[in-house]
Image (cartoon, rainbow, N blue to C red; front, side, top):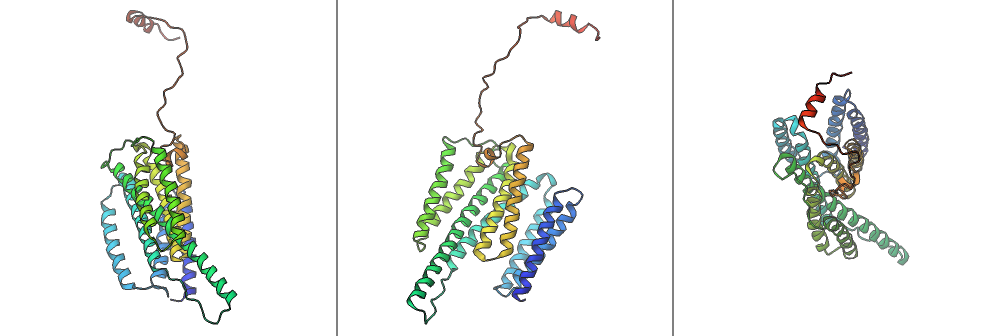
Length: 320
């Protein structure tokens, strides 16, 4: 399959994904929207597997058959009331895949060799361009692993709370918001360290551990009543993780699809928060600002005492 045919298939698949989202927005067209998504994903898979850059096609097909068989078997046993749990656990696989793709992309990324016959100025320009491209790739790797790790553990915790395997009460650790902020700050510092010395993978490994703990704590600190919004938000996270994987793999369709899923998941989460009269920021930030506060309002009015006999006499008065 030629590269031009692959790109044409990607465009058709992207349009079908957009039509799928449009169809799923209404009950009357939801079934058609599902079919658009299925057909689009089928086209994308065929174009990717049999494209000119594909390697190990046989192993990919074997993995797809095994994974598909497991997925069908599990999906047939799930009741409709358990669908949020299934969605949550599927999001965890997306996050885990993004983490694995990130490490694989880091290990297999090759720097092009300098062509011969270049002048000194051209050599300096070539090295500067390659250094810039390498830095961009390292940022993609770092962010992809971070988002994927947060999505993975967060989705596992959401699945546990929805299925009753984990207590649905919010985990209220002391200074929990400061812990979340510290995790973000330390991860940012680790990214700077990694960009300054890309050959040292220790900052990436440490960031992965922090991101896994951050994702677990972020969802664990949210109560079970807000889990539907959390699942929707994790859907958005999984989309951005897929988009990051698309950048690392130089796959345009994966970038577009991840952006569609990420943006639509965030919009849906916001709509759900508005419908539930919840703060969007407080939910996605792990219950930030949701500490229980005692109302200072006092009851106003005249105090009157009565007895059971007086109440009985009042009830005997016929309505006017």
